[in-house]
Length: 433
Length: 143
Image (tube, rainbow over all chains, first blue to last red):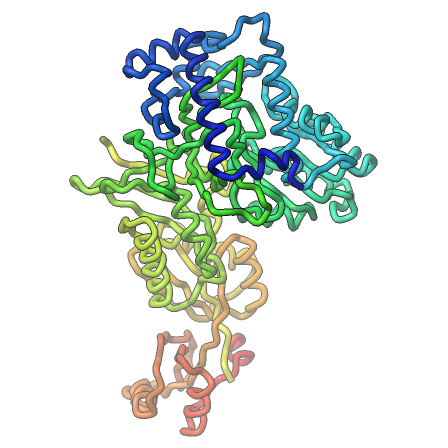
């Protein structure tokens, strides 16, 4: 169901008019209130008044995670602390945490967007939402919580951890919507099985999973094991938290970005140039309505592409493809950008192989060589050498056709490549540059 | 009239063959014949064992990719020209041999060859009609 029929189904021209109006006001205000942005714009030789159309967005400088760290903790806030009612922070596993703030209106906006997201994922008033995202500095728990209340659903603020108790509550309270990370969903299913609780007897109809990368294969696995419809939710604290984009339960083909609040772009990560229509690249966001922590052209380092085609659900908001990796994983092979996720999709489309792969890059002389190790499952295994060689050639040909880069395919034994999603070592780069 | 052979996919790295023999030894499976086809990256180990079911499940449990293939075991006179008689016959009958290897047998008049044909049924029919002795799987595993 569409929560905000007026905004979520705006015709493109009307939406762009709103975006432009909000962008101009936003840049104006940021320039006046945040010294960091004023300096960046001055350095780039851009004045807020130069923003005459949405195309002018590309004249603005990028903001990176490092910029947020440099301004730790509150240096990027655009309002006095008097007006900040909430503070969240990222975990900071790879460095200093990044800190974000919200005014009362920001919290209300966020709740509205999360209500839209939950609704797109199949929730409505009357549903019971088992919210196993962590509550705390992490935006997941509270983000879903406020959206659920705004929607009028009943929320169980169970947070993460204590899995056994979660299973008992799922059995006894009869929640209909599950919100957590996809890996925790599978963990819950395992625990339930050990405790003799049958997921097919529970009342779940939808699961809204995010905060970590997952794949189409994992979706099918979750749907099969948990007996629910699984959708992907996207967000990051630097932009607002969860509720930046959501898959609709009708199509489950790309995540609708709430464009009336966030302006998305796809850029080529190595040059920063705008990518062509439908091209895969780095996702960049500009906030349009945020007060306490507005952000200009934030480089998410997430790999995605944008699809402006109409969706069967009726929403007109652009769809981003599920985040398939990070720009940190991007390889440049003989001048061609290669994302491990692209290799994965080629393999996914071939029924005879399994999408378990690893990329090994070597430099021989001055030439880069990419080897794709692919596991041989029973389906692919012929006991004749020529069949396996043909399979290797076919994989290489499909990769060449899709990515435009020649690779060497090497068949390897099953389970020799790490299974876990997320942080699996998909790439081994042996180049010494 | 065909026999079952177990094929195992092996990466071309040290210790993999030994791992197969270890798994089979621990499962109490006796290897009766084997052949190894290899490329620079991978190999395919083909074995005839005394207990297919046991071998298959032991290897799968150990994480190997395993496949069962139908092969044909044919008795060959153990003298010069013995093998040639069969191969010549197969050639004139236009029956393709995908691969073949020898079966270990002690102190017998005839040797046994294991053949993989692209058309197993047709090959078995032609060979028996011509009077070659094709050995049944059950007999072969315990020979």
